Image (tube, rainbow, N blue to C red; front, side, top):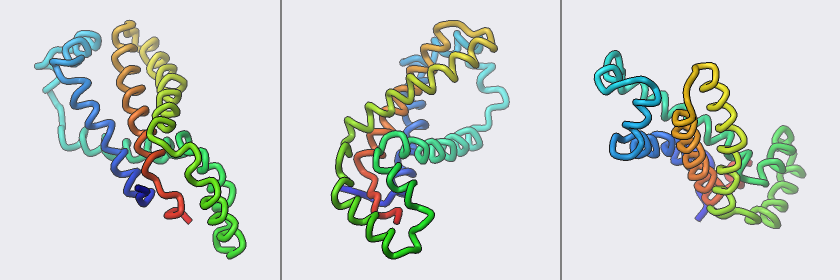
Length: 170
């Protein structure tokens, strides 16, 4: 089943929040995370604006969905190459023929999850690692956050690759 790109991006944009609810729960890795950050539950609740944090997390998740589409879906390069000329009927026909011929190649959850995991290891690990080094955080901090991002991007890539209808972009 293929869905409209923006609907899939919105659904995938929920993943960081949903994975975070589980990953950072005290019964999973939340307690270890608090310790790695040097926080306690009282300190965490001080000045915590839940609607703002969760709202921005949803918005940022939606942004990540757009980037993950280019990473997880090979056909996005084809779309990107042609997007400036979609007003031209010949270009639109060429795009439609390309999508009919190759639009479903490598379009599985598993393939998108692979690209999401690669993005987690190749992008999130170095970003979290560099930030942690300058913040003087330890290995546990890096492992917890990187694990979260690898799992999150893996799921987002899988959802985006499996369910995005590229024809809805043109």
